[in-house]
Length: 71
Image (cartoon, rainbow, N blue to C red; front, side):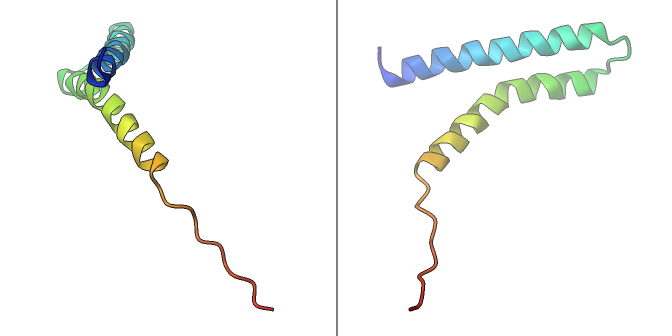
């Protein structure tokens, strides 16, 4: 499989799990509102992408600068 195929499968599984957990949490609450429910579902689809971008940026971050000791 190509990289993007594996990435999309992992992303779909993660997003589906987050959507299921959010749906279960919303169904347990008796006072759910449509607006917040839609925001929760939208965030379930977005946060895996944000996590991937953060990991990629952290991997390519330059080494931290260390002060040079003056003798």
